[in-house]
Image (cartoon, rainbow, N blue to C red):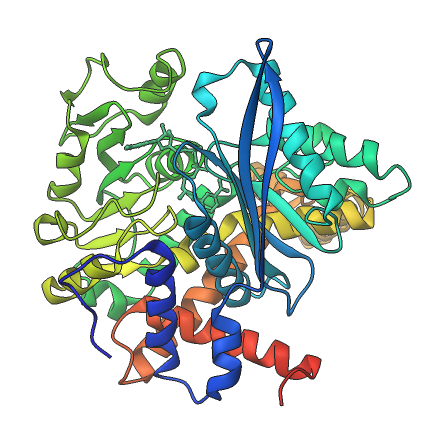
Length: 476
Ligand code: NAD
């Protein structure tokens, strides 16, 4: 199947076309594939909220793409342009994402049509609580059926309001904390969730660089991210953590940052923490930052030469209009759907390698899964074993020293530390991202019909969902 480069299609059609391409490499009966491809149900809600003495009506959606595993899982997005097509596309992506990284959830997504910048904090609280109430009433939020999480325009604050609304409407539910993930740690959240998607992006990139044949295929060199030039779009939750971990831990060079009000460029590297602090005090924008060259039309920076381009803001930013000008060797899709289907075709011809969203931003849902388990088990990870591990390590150190060997103090300190919740979360996330890329790479290189990582990742995901439905007895 060839990719159409002559016209853009909607986000949902784009996800479906990726599905079809992957299906072309699989031996799965058509009936079940049609069933897997489509969204199972969508709830659209309109509700009123009194804002500054006037009634305003809001519209929102929650889509469930698949429920071969329960609960269905996926973020809630607050954005001024969100629509049903987008929510359905994102719900489908969630199904494939969860399946790919072996997170046992179905796929779902929610959206509220709103520009959060226009409302005060208290108004946002009333709107979020009312939206949550509407979803709870229809069973679109609960620990066993549907568990939201943060996405664009939402974060810990909104998740805390949702769990509190849920608890007041379902007072007998002992598992109420598990009705939503991405909560503040003080409200049942888990260490490492805020950074999870960005850290997952970095773990995915690190794994990519452990595979010499994949690195060579992207016309890159080396086995690490050190000194690789990076352009990042969106310094929000995903973009900020991705960029700061890349800079601080991997010594990559961030040469451009794009935000809603323009872009910054410095081929010698930009200090992420400095820009981030500036952005916080500048209505979330970068305009006026003086330590790098400012571009009013930030989008032109997507086309600058770099090793890795990381779109971490929104959909369709790389499309037919700019795909031919992209100079990055690798596009790492931290955002959902940043490269349109038409653009992918043009990029393929140029040899640009795309590490797809369905894999690369799965860190968020992976750590959400850990948070959900923590909430259901009602115990912090590491609580039972941390001190035990430490005493065992001390015994081993003592035994080594009794043989007359002296260990360096630095090593003793590292060895004698039991794993904290954050250590365990990061370790589980790293393992998940590594394993998934290994599977994708293996499928990519071993199947002649597969020419990009997206198709490889989608094929693996569809196979796993198919197995899920078949085991449930829906097919045959
Ligand atoms: P966010 O709202 O925290 O950040 C988005 C950033 O993009 C903000 O800094 C915003 O100012 C910036 N932005 C807005 N318009 C822009 C423009 N025109 N040009 C450049 N930048 C612009 O959202 P997020 O949670 O970081 O999500 C970003 C993307 O990652 C979305 O596609 C989302 O679906 C995806 N994602 C998020 C998570 C998560 O855990 N938050 C998980 C998986 C995927």
